[in-house]
View 1: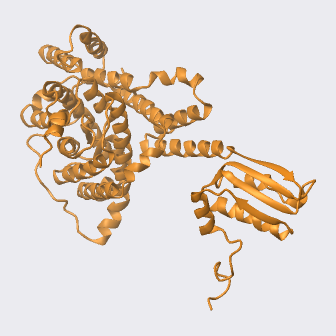
View 2: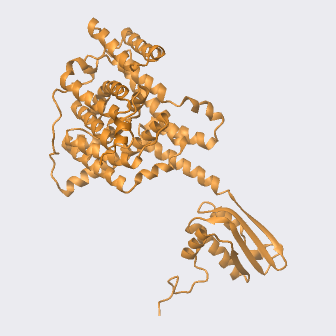
View 3: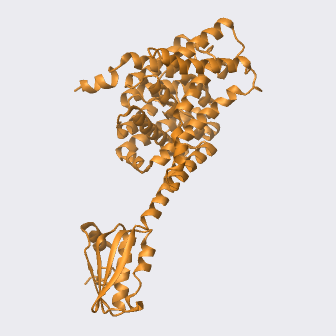
Length: 501
């Protein structure tokens, strides 16, 4: 049964704004897709066809309305050795397997792992992407490159003026679209000597068609493509789910991350079946879409459909669009993407959060590897969190008669075990040792087998030294952990040191 409420919300809530935003995105996708094809070492149509297929399919299957997915550099750089050594057909096969891996990830709910990506990592990821987007425009502004001249700079300045000033007069039409149309008309009408989209690579003619990779269906083929497919799937999901989170924040709405994971897999399988490379969500184009008014699935679908129509019917005209206009749009995206408040917040945020954010930026910008940057950020966050929590416990000793009372408060886990052991030194080494020991853990929690083993060892050590020991106040979860993993008071049969009778 069709959910009419969801249909209206995701597709028909604001058709005019979504259609116009989708057109802007389609124009911005063309040079990107061509550039990513060049990176991967394949014909430009492979990137363009991928962008068409992924955008149109993800509009139906994705879990984040208004987000743009297409061919991306993050995936393109992974497949360079595969294309070089085995050819484009193996790329198509690897992309299909990439989609299968992503579908499996959805079934296994691997999207939940994104809960471990903290705010500092997300801010670092966003800032790094903004820097990369800006850096990617610099070759188009290099005066030593043929076709880059004073007209180029004038057109970029003019486009930026339109992009930022037009909204002060009217928001009826997205200002980036107006900038592209105005500068395109001037460039074509005056035949200006500047770099155009067509100079980036041949614009394919005709429609994409259904194909199946021409590779042998053997185990050897699987062993060749599987490592690339797994890396592509991981990189694609990381970028897609982080971009979904960013679009969530920009639009103040939620999204279905599991559906997005599944949808990315379906879209990549579809892209390969129509002669395209793998892809994922694009933060730059997603920001263009949202800032241009796009919010629903219709905007994503229109982006893919418009790109298809442009290549099918208007290929020669599209090839004459001036690159300075698109450069200006991407500069706008980089400015809008960067979290400018993160700079003054360096004075106010904890130093650990600043280290995580700056490390994520440095690794992503230095390696152009989004997954590696996020991994470094998550690992640093985990280390800092463990270091913080390991100090959130205390041990207080008091004595009443012949009994010593130890009150343990806080979190005991692998990182705090050593300090816990030091605090619970043998009773016999105390200045006033007692014969009886009570360990009160009612205000403590034992998280793992390391903490269970530590408590077990402390009890066993004190008993070995002639003390009677009693542990009181274990909460239910901690008690279960101790029961499962402690060995004190168990027989040889229970701990595997004696055969069963």
